[in-house]
Image (tube, rainbow, N blue to C red; front, top):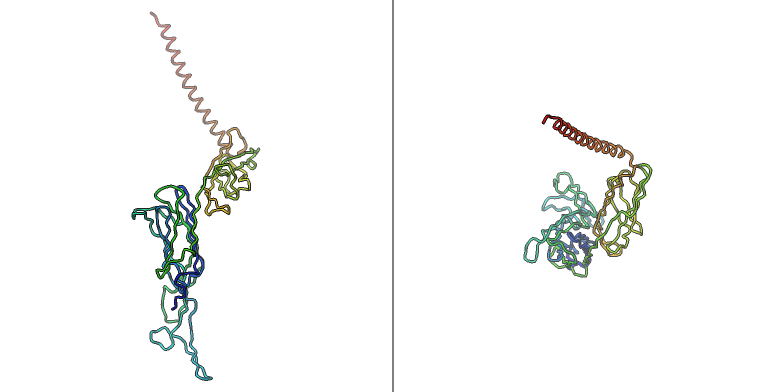
Length: 336
């Protein structure tokens, strides 16, 4: 085997850290030449603020093609022989293999003095492709060879540093399977500081029945500027997802008195390079509104129950008053 590119010049590594108040969403992605002759990466070390951890991948290879026969030529004559899989055979099988990233894992984070640096919570590993197992000739048994090989292209997760702060520095280093360094020019590392968002109920339009009560939601930054094209999840009176328009607003039609709306925050930085933290809000229809269908029965039931309790208290008070009045009259009428 010939190593043709020891410095992995054909490899591209991209690291994006969305710097939040309590957690840093981290996306590690790689592309380019992952073949063994191109020196694929085996470790990507991330230093976020005072914490350091690494994304590791033991390189692995998988078969692309395999010879089944060997043709022996002598002058104008030729003869074909089937390949075998026994050591020392005259016509052994030849397998063409390539390598790629597999079995991605993340090491524990540590601080400057080797102490605990934070917690990594993996959310997803994106599989580039699945290579099926190779069928071997009859008589050759290798159960592991029949299992598929998963090749990855991206790792996403949430890093929670020991100290909750923003404006942290990011440094990324990577090494190949041959312990050589991936050039800094092949690594694109950038960190985006998060901004707070504010989700509010901006307007309401009550309806006459259960299908036309409407609520306007508005998502803005701390300065009141709209945050467009963000998804807001709704639950309670309606179970759906709406998207804010250019004014950061989205309407929804309710089917009940209580609504909870939540914006989970950005997974990736937007085209404007901004990253917003999540927020949520709730809305309860006014008690006087009489257009919530089946819930009206519950309201009337509660009204009746409250009325019954008040009536019971009133009867007790009247009973005590009558008892006291009777005793007072008896004392006045008694002979002196």
